[in-house]
Length: 226
Image 1: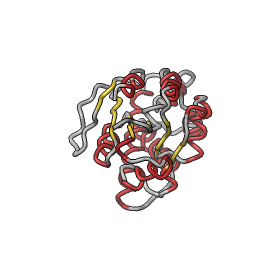
Image 2 (image 1 turned 90 degrees about the vertical axis):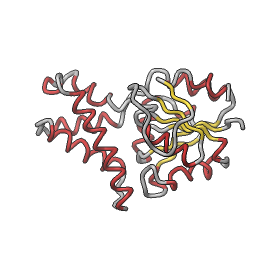
Image 3 (image 1 turned 30 degrees about the vertical axis):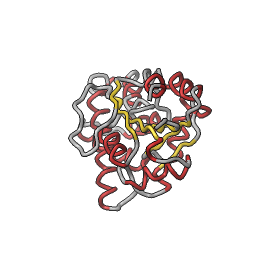
Image 4 (image 1 turned 180 degrees about the horizontal axis):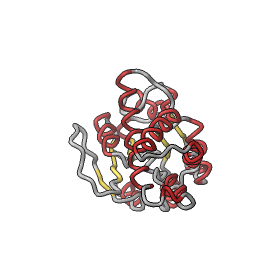
């Protein structure tokens, strides 16, 4: 079965979630030694809060969850600096794309594939990141969970792909740097690629990704061979 549609998670997959803390550390002495830990805690809490809110039904948008995660991370680091918080949140609107992303998306479009984003991010956050990275012309749809009011890995989120692209689940290759997201997409019925940038073990979940890559540069060749 040919792959017609390639769908990407956004944060950590196309966009570098560490970029905000790393950039802020360049001109903030208090962050020079701790920005990596701060960024990791921020991301961990951001994800944990999406899972918990999906279970409890207490939905808020991803901007709120991102701020809540940062507040926890800053308190854990002993940082009480409203101006730093404001700067870090502002930088999240402008996260850098990984270097290989534009060429990778361009190669998929040259192959005739439909491409899109399926993300927990709010529409405004995603628009900002896509615009900052200059990749809007390479995406057919940018889909936000705000359309269904629940975070991944709810099947309601993955359902959005079929509605937007008019395709069957088996015709979709779903790409995520989050192991749990790739596993959930596989269980849903997509073919899945896990972008394992950190070299982590595969998550012990019912779904297992069909392919594992260390970055996105080899994706067009992989898709061409499917």
